[in-house]
Image 1: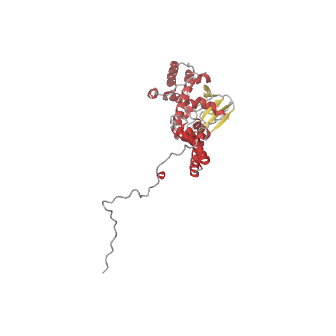
Image 2: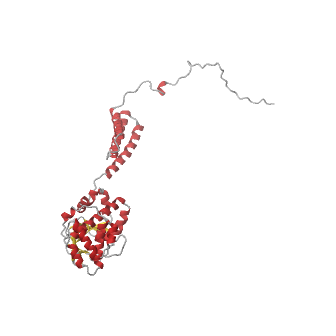
Image 3: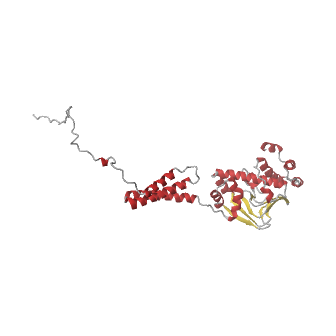
Length: 340
């Protein structure tokens, strides 16, 4: 009969005290510092100062990210110099080389985004007068004018639009140079000067009704240049840029208001039109649109047109002439009261 194997268990007596004198001790210099090493080279400390300065830059500073990346880049360069020349540590040099490449790429990208945007000479006055006061960034203006629009020209006497012939659905334009005159059935209405929309009332009035024709004739009174957008592509672009969409609503409304003042005072020149800086109301926009549409649909409108054009430039006279206009051309007073 086989005797079962017994496992050996080491039992420590209760009264046993280990011999600490003969125990093997781990050297203290492997787990703790016996003596502090000498201070590193000045390059090491300057590198850390750059890191610290970059991290404490306030985020409210306009260029804080550029400064942060620049200081991190300088710090990495100094660490590489220290690790190579004074420490001879290959691993420190390699890691800081990686950090240097990453920060340098970020720095270059941020500086590239901050580059000055060059606006074409022909468009610089347009930007400074219409878009810069409304805080439109140059890069956004460049996108607006660089992809789906072109600069066209007209010689003196050439027509931009002919009443009852030219469609209003194709384009939206701003005059850059020269002067245009707007007339209806041979009667002069008002002038169009640089940095003003040429067909803003038509653009506004046909946002819901397509397929309409110009109710006025627009002819170049000088050699003219104008910026012309494709209406369909412009509308699509503005839908993707809510800020610029609101800017265009304001600019077009303001332009329609200026044209309303010009109708009241046909002698209004470019210098005087610059002083008209009122926020447009829907009432003002409807006035011009209804005027053009009503003129085209009324056969005996010439007498009323002359009455309207004989007004003065004062605000009270403007309201009186608007009332005469409503009566002469059949515009609903109720419609005026509702929107104003």
